[in-house]
Length: 327
Figure 1 (spheres, helix red, strand yellow):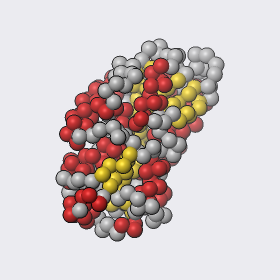
Figure 2: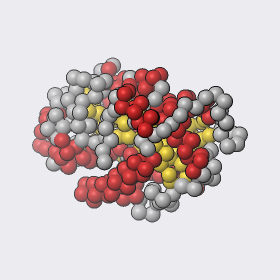
Figure 3: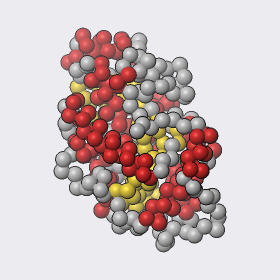
Figure 4: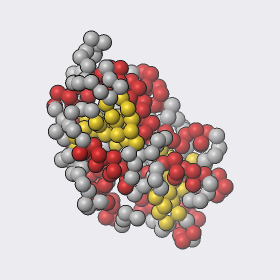
């Protein structure tokens, strides 16, 4: 299974296939009163956080509830995930996590939760590319130039990530393996911190979420060398993909998904899925995310569960092959 971009027509077809009927203003409120917490295990301003907040703005009125986004950072997203795994399974505490969620079992063998058993995947929310960025001061002409320089003096170079096991880290490791590079990994607390040091040339490159990096690329404060996916991004149509740059095995799709504690009542999960799919079909949200390089992509729950199993296994292989360790 792979995650692919979908057009508006395809998205509407997904909505129809899911059998989601429009939800009107008269729809009942959430099971009880009180705010719904969307826990984001990364820093404010990260791609996962941006998408969570965009969802919360549209979803709250449909459920008749206030939705509060809470950032609970640390240990590659495991701190926030653990908090949701322990929360009451009543629909009032949910998790918005990235594809890094499936990497953590291989990185943290003593996790206080089971990634597959302790959560129910509601749906993927969006897919978006990472973009390989560097400080303009480094003067890299393109990806080939960067690779040649690193190969000539590997001890001099370092690459940033938003944390061990994050989607930015996985994209970087795929690139490192595909290009046969040796360099020093520098994990940061989150995307904003990694971007700041990359702009300041304290690290040499970073596979930044396009959502977070785009304004800085447009202003010239970051230099973009390639998008980290197999295809170009419509937001940066003149920028080659990492596959076009000569490293197809480095391509990686970053997704963001919505989860609930495993024992959440099926009716609550079903309604959250239905409402979220409707929100993702709204032109206003699609336009907002498109400007950031993100593409809404709802997924039936069974397909999401299969994707999680598949990517957990694939991530374990990558962690082993790349020799990734928690630092």
